[in-house]
Image 1 (cartoon, rainbow, N blue to C red):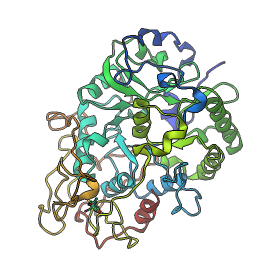
Image 2: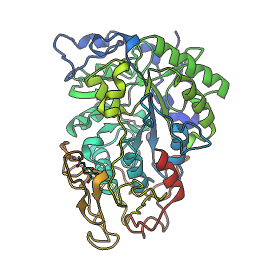
Image 3: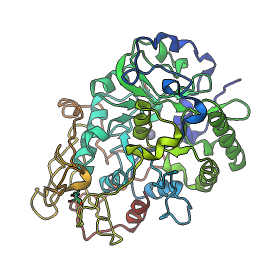
Length: 471
Ligand SMILES: *[C@@H]1O[C@H](CO)[C@@H](O)[C@H](O)[C@H]1NC(C)=O
Ligand SMILES: *[C@@H]1O[C@H](CO)[C@@H](O)[C@H](O)[C@H]1NC(C)=O
Ligand SMILES: [Zn+2]
Protein backbone atom coordinates (compact mmCIF):
# COMPACT_ATOMS: atom_id res chain seq x y z
CA UNK A 1 0.00 0.00 0.00
CA UNK A 2 1.25 3.44 -0.92
CA UNK A 3 0.47 6.51 1.11
CA UNK A 4 0.79 9.85 -0.50
CA UNK A 5 -0.10 13.29 0.47
CA UNK A 6 -3.03 14.91 -1.20
CA UNK A 7 -3.17 18.61 -0.74
CA UNK A 8 -6.16 20.85 -0.41
CA UNK A 9 -5.71 24.39 0.76
CA UNK A 10 -8.88 24.26 2.75
CA UNK A 11 -7.77 21.17 4.58
CA UNK A 12 -4.34 22.08 5.82
CA UNK A 13 -4.98 20.34 9.09
CA UNK A 14 -5.84 17.11 7.40
CA UNK A 15 -2.76 17.01 5.25
CA UNK A 16 -0.18 18.06 7.80
CA UNK A 17 0.02 14.62 9.23
CA UNK A 18 0.21 12.83 5.95
CA UNK A 19 3.69 13.88 5.00
CA UNK A 20 6.16 11.04 4.78
CA UNK A 21 3.77 8.32 5.73
CA UNK A 22 5.92 5.60 4.24
CA UNK A 23 7.93 5.56 7.46
CA UNK A 24 5.22 4.06 9.62
CA UNK A 25 6.82 1.99 12.33
CA UNK A 26 4.71 -0.98 13.19
CA UNK A 27 7.17 -2.20 15.78
CA UNK A 28 6.96 0.90 17.99
CA UNK A 29 4.25 -0.67 20.11
CA UNK A 30 6.60 -3.39 21.34
CA UNK A 31 7.95 -0.84 23.81
CA UNK A 32 4.74 -1.32 25.79
CA UNK A 33 4.68 -4.63 27.66
CA UNK A 34 1.16 -5.91 28.42
CA UNK A 35 2.63 -7.85 31.34
CA UNK A 36 3.43 -4.65 33.19
CA UNK A 37 0.94 -2.30 31.54
CA UNK A 38 -2.26 -3.44 33.24
CA UNK A 39 -5.74 -2.51 32.07
CA UNK A 40 -7.47 -0.14 32.74
CA UNK A 41 -4.80 2.06 34.34
CA UNK A 42 -2.42 1.33 31.49
CA UNK A 43 -3.42 0.19 28.01
CA UNK A 44 -0.88 -0.73 25.34
CA UNK A 45 -1.46 0.25 21.70
CA UNK A 46 -3.32 -2.64 20.13
CA UNK A 47 -4.94 -3.36 16.81
CA UNK A 48 -7.45 -5.66 18.50
CA UNK A 49 -10.15 -4.77 21.04
CA UNK A 50 -9.25 -4.45 24.74
CA UNK A 51 -9.33 -7.29 27.23
CA UNK A 52 -9.27 -9.91 24.49
CA UNK A 53 -12.85 -9.29 23.43
CA UNK A 54 -13.80 -10.79 20.11
CA UNK A 55 -13.94 -8.08 17.45
CA UNK A 56 -17.23 -9.30 16.06
CA UNK A 57 -18.86 -8.90 19.48
CA UNK A 58 -17.73 -5.39 20.28
CA UNK A 59 -19.57 -2.25 19.22
CA UNK A 60 -18.40 -0.49 16.08
CA UNK A 61 -17.95 3.00 17.45
CA UNK A 62 -18.27 6.04 15.27
CA UNK A 63 -16.83 9.23 16.68
CA UNK A 64 -17.92 12.45 15.03
CA UNK A 65 -15.70 15.34 16.02
CA UNK A 66 -16.02 19.02 15.17
CA UNK A 67 -13.19 21.51 15.51
CA UNK A 68 -12.83 25.24 16.15
CA UNK A 69 -15.33 27.95 17.10
CA UNK A 70 -18.77 27.08 18.45
CA UNK A 71 -20.86 29.91 17.06
CA UNK A 72 -24.16 30.77 15.47
CA UNK A 73 -22.90 29.80 12.04
CA UNK A 74 -21.28 26.48 12.90
CA UNK A 75 -23.74 24.93 15.36
CA UNK A 76 -26.51 24.47 12.74
CA UNK A 77 -24.01 22.64 10.49
CA UNK A 78 -23.20 20.23 13.28
CA UNK A 79 -26.90 19.87 14.03
CA UNK A 80 -27.74 18.93 10.46
CA UNK A 81 -24.94 16.40 10.29
CA UNK A 82 -26.19 14.78 13.49
CA UNK A 83 -29.86 14.84 12.52
CA UNK A 84 -31.76 11.81 11.28
CA UNK A 85 -32.91 13.99 8.43
CA UNK A 86 -31.01 17.18 7.57
CA UNK A 87 -34.23 18.77 6.38
CA UNK A 88 -35.75 18.26 9.82
CA UNK A 89 -32.90 19.12 12.15
CA UNK A 90 -35.14 18.78 15.18
CA UNK A 91 -35.27 15.02 14.74
CA UNK A 92 -32.04 13.52 16.05
CA UNK A 93 -30.34 10.43 14.75
CA UNK A 94 -30.48 7.83 17.49
CA UNK A 95 -28.25 5.09 18.80
CA UNK A 96 -29.66 1.55 19.10
CA UNK A 97 -30.89 2.34 22.63
CA UNK A 98 -33.02 5.21 21.39
CA UNK A 99 -30.84 8.01 22.72
CA UNK A 100 -29.80 10.85 20.40
CA UNK A 101 -26.27 10.45 19.10
CA UNK A 102 -23.60 12.65 20.64
CA UNK A 103 -20.40 14.18 19.33
CA UNK A 104 -17.24 15.89 20.54
CA UNK A 105 -16.33 19.48 19.77
CA UNK A 106 -12.73 20.64 20.09
CA UNK A 107 -13.55 24.24 20.87
CA UNK A 108 -11.47 27.35 20.91
CA UNK A 109 -12.18 30.64 22.66
CA UNK A 110 -11.54 32.75 19.59
CA UNK A 111 -14.89 33.57 17.91
CA UNK A 112 -16.85 31.17 20.09
CA UNK A 113 -20.18 32.02 21.71
CA UNK A 114 -20.19 30.71 25.26
CA UNK A 115 -23.96 30.40 25.40
CA UNK A 116 -23.77 28.01 22.45
CA UNK A 117 -20.89 26.11 24.03
CA UNK A 118 -23.08 25.65 27.08
CA UNK A 119 -26.03 24.49 24.98
CA UNK A 120 -23.90 22.01 23.07
CA UNK A 121 -22.69 20.52 26.34
CA UNK A 122 -26.07 20.65 28.07
CA UNK A 123 -27.51 18.57 25.25
CA UNK A 124 -25.16 15.74 26.23
CA UNK A 125 -22.31 16.40 23.87
CA UNK A 126 -18.66 16.78 24.77
CA UNK A 127 -16.59 19.93 24.71
CA UNK A 128 -12.83 19.51 24.51
CA UNK A 129 -9.91 21.90 24.35
CA UNK A 130 -8.48 23.32 21.13
CA UNK A 131 -6.54 26.26 22.70
CA UNK A 132 -7.80 29.80 23.13
CA UNK A 133 -6.55 31.26 19.87
CA UNK A 134 -6.07 28.23 17.66
CA UNK A 135 -2.32 28.09 18.13
CA UNK A 136 -0.29 25.18 16.74
CA UNK A 137 2.27 23.74 19.19
CA UNK A 138 0.63 25.90 21.85
CA UNK A 139 2.16 27.20 25.07
CA UNK A 140 0.53 25.92 28.23
CA UNK A 141 -1.32 29.21 28.77
CA UNK A 142 -3.23 28.69 25.54
CA UNK A 143 -4.29 25.22 26.66
CA UNK A 144 -5.11 26.00 30.28
CA UNK A 145 -6.64 29.40 29.54
CA UNK A 146 -9.18 27.84 27.18
CA UNK A 147 -10.35 25.46 29.88
CA UNK A 148 -10.57 28.27 32.40
CA UNK A 149 -12.60 30.50 30.12
CA UNK A 150 -15.00 27.74 29.02
CA UNK A 151 -15.48 26.66 32.61
CA UNK A 152 -16.14 30.20 33.78
CA UNK A 153 -18.40 31.33 30.94
CA UNK A 154 -20.08 28.15 29.75
CA UNK A 155 -20.17 26.42 33.13
CA UNK A 156 -18.60 23.17 31.99
CA UNK A 157 -16.87 21.38 34.85
CA UNK A 158 -13.17 20.75 34.42
CA UNK A 159 -13.65 17.02 34.80
CA UNK A 160 -15.78 16.99 31.61
CA UNK A 161 -13.47 19.32 29.74
CA UNK A 162 -10.26 17.37 29.60
CA UNK A 163 -9.69 16.23 26.04
CA UNK A 164 -7.34 17.99 23.65
CA UNK A 165 -6.68 18.30 19.95
CA UNK A 166 -3.78 20.37 18.68
CA UNK A 167 -4.75 23.12 16.22
CA UNK A 168 -3.53 22.19 12.73
CA UNK A 169 -2.84 18.78 14.35
CA UNK A 170 0.52 20.37 15.06
CA UNK A 171 1.75 18.99 18.34
CA UNK A 172 5.19 18.39 19.77
CA UNK A 173 6.83 16.54 22.61
CA UNK A 174 6.19 19.65 24.70
CA UNK A 175 2.46 19.49 23.98
CA UNK A 176 2.28 16.13 25.73
CA UNK A 177 4.30 17.49 28.65
CA UNK A 178 1.82 20.37 28.94
CA UNK A 179 -1.18 18.05 28.77
CA UNK A 180 0.40 15.80 31.37
CA UNK A 181 1.04 18.72 33.68
CA UNK A 182 -2.58 19.82 33.35
CA UNK A 183 -3.78 16.23 33.94
CA UNK A 184 -5.73 15.89 30.73
CA UNK A 185 -7.74 12.72 30.19
CA UNK A 186 -6.79 12.35 26.55
CA UNK A 187 -5.24 13.78 23.43
CA UNK A 188 -6.65 13.14 19.98
CA UNK A 189 -4.20 14.68 17.53
CA UNK A 190 -2.09 11.79 16.23
CA UNK A 191 -3.06 10.06 13.00
CA UNK A 192 -3.54 6.34 12.38
CA UNK A 193 -3.28 4.49 9.08
CA UNK A 194 -3.97 0.78 8.62
CA UNK A 195 -0.85 -0.70 10.20
CA UNK A 196 -1.22 1.49 13.28
CA UNK A 197 -5.03 1.60 13.47
CA UNK A 198 -4.87 1.21 17.23
CA UNK A 199 -7.68 1.31 19.67
CA UNK A 200 -7.22 4.13 22.20
CA UNK A 201 -4.17 3.53 24.40
CA UNK A 202 -2.50 5.24 27.31
CA UNK A 203 0.67 7.24 26.91
CA UNK A 204 2.63 5.49 29.64
CA UNK A 205 5.01 4.27 26.96
CA UNK A 206 4.85 7.15 24.55
CA UNK A 207 3.09 7.92 21.28
CA UNK A 208 2.81 5.09 18.74
CA UNK A 209 1.09 6.93 15.89
CA UNK A 210 2.43 9.48 13.41
CA UNK A 211 5.84 7.87 13.80
CA UNK A 212 6.89 9.50 10.51
CA UNK A 213 7.28 12.78 12.39
CA UNK A 214 9.67 11.18 14.95
CA UNK A 215 7.21 11.62 17.83
CA UNK A 216 7.47 7.87 18.54
CA UNK A 217 11.20 8.25 19.19
CA UNK A 218 10.69 10.88 21.87
CA UNK A 219 10.89 9.95 25.55
CA UNK A 220 7.23 10.76 26.21
CA UNK A 221 5.49 9.19 29.16
CA UNK A 222 2.21 10.50 30.52
CA UNK A 223 0.89 7.60 32.61
CA UNK A 224 -2.85 7.13 32.37
CA UNK A 225 -3.45 9.81 29.77
CA UNK A 226 -5.04 8.39 26.64
CA UNK A 227 -4.28 8.87 22.99
CA UNK A 228 -7.34 8.48 20.78
CA UNK A 229 -5.77 8.11 17.34
CA UNK A 230 -7.46 9.82 14.44
CA UNK A 231 -8.15 7.02 12.00
CA UNK A 232 -7.46 8.03 8.42
CA UNK A 233 -9.71 7.33 5.45
CA UNK A 234 -7.64 5.48 2.87
CA UNK A 235 -8.73 6.19 -0.69
CA UNK A 236 -8.74 3.84 -3.67
CA UNK A 237 -5.14 4.65 -4.63
CA UNK A 238 -3.87 4.26 -1.08
CA UNK A 239 -3.67 7.92 -0.06
CA UNK A 240 -4.72 8.75 3.45
CA UNK A 241 -7.14 11.52 4.39
CA UNK A 242 -7.88 12.82 7.83
CA UNK A 243 -10.11 15.82 8.39
CA UNK A 244 -12.86 17.03 6.06
CA UNK A 245 -12.43 14.13 3.65
CA UNK A 246 -15.36 15.48 1.60
CA UNK A 247 -13.09 18.24 0.33
CA UNK A 248 -10.76 15.74 -1.29
CA UNK A 249 -12.83 14.40 -4.18
CA UNK A 250 -16.32 14.14 -5.64
CA UNK A 251 -19.23 13.15 -3.45
CA UNK A 252 -19.51 9.81 -5.27
CA UNK A 253 -15.86 9.01 -4.74
CA UNK A 254 -15.83 10.08 -1.11
CA UNK A 255 -18.97 8.08 -0.42
CA UNK A 256 -17.23 5.00 -1.76
CA UNK A 257 -14.14 5.67 0.35
CA UNK A 258 -16.24 6.05 3.46
CA UNK A 259 -18.07 2.82 2.82
CA UNK A 260 -14.93 0.86 2.02
CA UNK A 261 -13.11 2.16 5.07
CA UNK A 262 -16.07 1.56 7.30
CA UNK A 263 -16.26 -2.00 6.02
CA UNK A 264 -12.58 -2.53 6.76
CA UNK A 265 -13.15 -1.47 10.36
CA UNK A 266 -16.45 -3.26 10.74
CA UNK A 267 -15.41 -6.61 9.31
CA UNK A 268 -11.92 -6.29 10.81
CA UNK A 269 -10.79 -5.27 14.28
CA UNK A 270 -13.51 -2.69 14.76
CA UNK A 271 -11.26 0.06 15.97
CA UNK A 272 -13.30 3.25 16.28
CA UNK A 273 -14.22 4.91 13.00
CA UNK A 274 -13.89 8.68 13.03
CA UNK A 275 -15.47 11.44 11.02
CA UNK A 276 -13.47 14.58 11.75
CA UNK A 277 -14.97 17.82 10.52
CA UNK A 278 -14.63 21.55 10.52
CA UNK A 279 -18.27 22.68 10.42
CA UNK A 280 -17.29 25.84 8.53
CA UNK A 281 -16.35 23.57 5.63
CA UNK A 282 -19.21 21.12 5.92
CA UNK A 283 -22.17 22.91 4.31
CA UNK A 284 -21.72 21.22 0.95
CA UNK A 285 -21.37 17.75 2.44
CA UNK A 286 -24.34 17.40 4.73
CA UNK A 287 -26.16 15.08 2.36
CA UNK A 288 -23.03 12.98 1.87
CA UNK A 289 -22.57 12.35 5.59
CA UNK A 290 -26.27 11.89 6.11
CA UNK A 291 -26.34 9.11 3.53
CA UNK A 292 -23.27 7.47 4.99
CA UNK A 293 -24.60 7.55 8.55
CA UNK A 294 -27.96 6.30 7.33
CA UNK A 295 -26.26 3.36 5.68
CA UNK A 296 -24.00 2.35 8.60
CA UNK A 297 -26.79 2.84 11.15
CA UNK A 298 -28.49 -0.19 9.66
CA UNK A 299 -25.97 -2.29 11.56
CA UNK A 300 -27.36 -3.04 15.01
CA UNK A 301 -23.95 -2.80 16.68
CA UNK A 302 -22.96 0.64 15.42
CA UNK A 303 -22.83 3.25 18.17
CA UNK A 304 -22.09 6.95 17.75
CA UNK A 305 -20.18 8.20 20.78
CA UNK A 306 -18.24 11.11 22.20
CA UNK A 307 -14.61 10.56 23.06
CA UNK A 308 -15.56 10.51 26.74
CA UNK A 309 -18.09 7.73 26.09
CA UNK A 310 -15.50 5.82 24.08
CA UNK A 311 -13.03 5.98 26.96
CA UNK A 312 -15.70 4.90 29.45
CA UNK A 313 -16.09 1.82 27.31
CA UNK A 314 -12.33 1.32 27.03
CA UNK A 315 -12.07 1.25 30.82
CA UNK A 316 -14.81 -1.33 31.08
CA UNK A 317 -15.31 -2.94 27.68
CA UNK A 318 -18.54 -4.85 27.12
CA UNK A 319 -20.06 -6.60 24.10
CA UNK A 320 -22.34 -4.56 21.86
CA UNK A 321 -25.29 -6.46 23.30
CA UNK A 322 -24.72 -4.73 26.66
CA UNK A 323 -24.19 -1.20 25.37
CA UNK A 324 -27.76 -0.03 25.90
CA UNK A 325 -27.45 -0.59 29.64
CA UNK A 326 -24.22 1.31 30.19
CA UNK A 327 -24.89 4.38 32.35
CA UNK A 328 -22.80 6.63 30.12
CA UNK A 329 -25.04 5.79 27.15
CA UNK A 330 -28.27 6.92 28.80
CA UNK A 331 -29.90 10.19 27.88
CA UNK A 332 -32.20 11.39 30.67
CA UNK A 333 -32.37 15.17 30.72
CA UNK A 334 -32.55 16.91 34.09
CA UNK A 335 -35.98 18.20 35.08
CA UNK A 336 -34.99 21.37 36.84
CA UNK A 337 -38.56 22.62 37.04
CA UNK A 338 -38.07 26.22 36.01
CA UNK A 339 -36.26 28.16 33.34
CA UNK A 340 -32.70 28.78 34.39
CA UNK A 341 -29.60 29.68 32.50
CA UNK A 342 -28.30 26.16 32.00
CA UNK A 343 -28.35 25.82 28.23
CA UNK A 344 -31.52 23.74 28.27
CA UNK A 345 -35.07 24.68 27.34
CA UNK A 346 -36.17 23.81 30.88
CA UNK A 347 -39.82 24.78 30.46
CA UNK A 348 -40.18 23.56 26.87
CA UNK A 349 -41.13 27.02 25.75
CA UNK A 350 -39.21 26.66 22.51
CA UNK A 351 -36.53 29.12 23.50
CA UNK A 352 -33.18 28.73 25.13
CA UNK A 353 -31.47 31.25 27.26
CA UNK A 354 -28.52 32.93 25.70
CA UNK A 355 -25.85 35.02 27.21
CA UNK A 356 -23.39 37.43 25.81
CA UNK A 357 -20.01 38.24 27.04
CA UNK A 358 -19.06 41.44 28.78
CA UNK A 359 -15.28 41.27 28.51
CA UNK A 360 -13.50 38.93 26.14
CA UNK A 361 -11.19 36.40 27.76
CA UNK A 362 -7.59 36.52 26.65
CA UNK A 363 -4.50 34.48 27.27
CA UNK A 364 -3.41 37.11 29.77
CA UNK A 365 -6.76 37.13 31.46
CA UNK A 366 -8.82 34.04 30.65
CA UNK A 367 -11.45 34.79 33.26
CA UNK A 368 -12.02 38.54 33.25
CA UNK A 369 -14.08 40.15 35.99
CA UNK A 370 -17.70 40.56 35.24
CA UNK A 371 -19.09 43.96 34.40
CA UNK A 372 -22.46 42.98 35.84
CA UNK A 373 -21.84 41.72 39.36
CA UNK A 374 -23.26 38.45 40.59
CA UNK A 375 -26.57 38.92 42.34
CA UNK A 376 -27.75 41.77 40.14
CA UNK A 377 -29.91 41.44 37.07
CA UNK A 378 -27.91 39.91 34.28
CA UNK A 379 -25.15 38.96 36.64
CA UNK A 380 -23.91 35.44 36.55
CA UNK A 381 -22.27 33.47 39.31
CA UNK A 382 -19.89 30.77 38.07
CA UNK A 383 -20.84 27.19 38.72
CA UNK A 384 -19.31 25.96 41.98
CA UNK A 385 -17.36 22.72 42.18
CA UNK A 386 -20.23 21.08 44.03
CA UNK A 387 -23.02 21.51 41.48
CA UNK A 388 -23.51 20.07 38.00
CA UNK A 389 -23.99 22.76 35.38
CA UNK A 390 -27.44 21.50 34.42
CA UNK A 391 -28.69 22.14 37.96
CA UNK A 392 -26.97 25.47 38.53
CA UNK A 393 -28.96 28.68 38.30
CA UNK A 394 -26.16 31.18 37.69
CA UNK A 395 -28.44 34.19 37.99
CA UNK A 396 -30.04 33.08 41.24
CA UNK A 397 -26.72 31.64 42.40
CA UNK A 398 -28.45 28.46 43.51
CA UNK A 399 -27.94 24.75 42.98
CA UNK A 400 -31.36 23.25 42.21
CA UNK A 401 -30.27 19.70 42.75
CA UNK A 402 -32.20 18.53 45.79
CA UNK A 403 -31.26 14.88 46.20
CA UNK A 404 -28.66 12.26 45.51
CA UNK A 405 -29.81 11.58 41.95
CA UNK A 406 -28.11 14.72 40.71
CA UNK A 407 -25.27 15.43 43.08
CA UNK A 408 -21.96 16.21 41.46
CA UNK A 409 -18.54 17.28 42.58
CA UNK A 410 -15.89 18.36 40.14
CA UNK A 411 -12.95 16.32 41.31
CA UNK A 412 -10.77 17.19 38.38
CA UNK A 413 -7.31 18.56 38.54
CA UNK A 414 -7.92 22.26 38.01
CA UNK A 415 -5.79 24.25 35.59
CA UNK A 416 -2.55 25.49 37.04
CA UNK A 417 -2.81 28.88 38.69
CA UNK A 418 0.04 30.31 36.73
CA UNK A 419 -1.08 28.91 33.40
CA UNK A 420 -3.10 31.62 31.79
CA UNK A 421 -2.44 34.53 34.11
CA UNK A 422 1.01 35.67 33.15
CA UNK A 423 1.27 34.50 29.63
CA UNK A 424 2.77 37.69 28.38
CA UNK A 425 3.41 37.74 24.70
CA UNK A 426 2.85 34.12 23.80
CA UNK A 427 -0.14 34.49 21.59
CA UNK A 428 0.05 38.15 20.93
CA UNK A 429 -3.65 38.57 20.32
CA UNK A 430 -6.71 38.75 22.46
CA UNK A 431 -9.55 36.53 21.48
CA UNK A 432 -11.87 38.50 19.30
CA UNK A 433 -9.25 40.94 18.15
CA UNK A 434 -7.31 38.85 15.68
CA UNK A 435 -8.07 37.73 12.18
CA UNK A 436 -9.02 34.10 12.06
CA UNK A 437 -8.13 31.45 9.57
CA UNK A 438 -10.11 31.56 6.32
CA UNK A 439 -13.71 30.58 6.78
CA UNK A 440 -14.05 31.82 10.32
CA UNK A 441 -16.73 34.27 11.15
CA UNK A 442 -15.87 36.70 13.85
CA UNK A 443 -19.15 37.14 15.64
CA UNK A 444 -17.48 38.60 18.68
CA UNK A 445 -16.34 41.72 16.94
CA UNK A 446 -18.46 44.80 16.93
CA UNK A 447 -21.05 45.65 19.49
CA UNK A 448 -23.25 42.68 20.15
CA UNK A 449 -21.09 40.53 22.33
CA UNK A 450 -19.69 43.18 24.58
CA UNK A 451 -22.80 45.00 25.61
CA UNK A 452 -25.14 42.25 26.56
CA UNK A 453 -25.87 40.61 29.85
CA UNK A 454 -25.37 37.06 30.85
CA UNK A 455 -28.28 34.79 30.27
CA UNK A 456 -30.98 37.31 29.80
CA UNK A 457 -33.90 34.94 29.55
CA UNK A 458 -35.88 37.33 27.40
CA UNK A 459 -33.44 36.84 24.60
CA UNK A 460 -33.66 33.81 22.40
CA UNK A 461 -31.81 33.04 19.24
CA UNK A 462 -33.94 30.92 17.00
CA UNK A 463 -31.05 29.17 15.42
CA UNK A 464 -29.53 28.32 18.75
CA UNK A 465 -32.80 27.07 20.11
CA UNK A 466 -33.38 24.98 17.04
CA UNK A 467 -29.96 23.44 17.16
CA UNK A 468 -29.94 22.78 20.84
CA UNK A 469 -33.32 21.05 20.83
CA UNK A 470 -31.84 18.44 18.66
CA UNK A 471 -28.35 18.32 20.03
C1 LIG B 1 4.06 23.69 14.50
O1 LIG B 1 4.90 23.46 15.61
C2 LIG B 1 6.23 23.91 15.48
C3 LIG B 1 6.97 23.59 16.75
O2 LIG B 1 6.84 22.26 17.09
C4 LIG B 1 6.26 25.40 15.21
O3 LIG B 1 7.58 25.82 14.99
C5 LIG B 1 5.38 25.73 14.02
O4 LIG B 1 5.31 27.13 13.87
C6 LIG B 1 3.99 25.18 14.21
N1 LIG B 1 3.17 25.41 13.03
C7 LIG B 1 1.94 25.87 13.11
C8 LIG B 1 1.18 26.00 11.82
O5 LIG B 1 1.40 26.15 14.15
C1 LIG C 1 -34.67 14.51 42.98
O1 LIG C 1 -34.71 15.91 42.74
C2 LIG C 1 -35.17 16.25 41.45
C3 LIG C 1 -35.04 17.76 41.33
O2 LIG C 1 -35.40 18.43 42.48
C4 LIG C 1 -36.60 15.76 41.25
O3 LIG C 1 -37.02 16.08 39.96
C5 LIG C 1 -36.61 14.26 41.45
O4 LIG C 1 -37.95 13.80 41.36
C6 LIG C 1 -36.03 13.91 42.80
N1 LIG C 1 -35.97 12.47 42.93
C7 LIG C 1 -36.25 11.84 44.05
C8 LIG C 1 -36.06 10.36 44.03
O5 LIG C 1 -36.65 12.42 45.03
ZN1 LIG D 1 -8.70 23.69 14.51
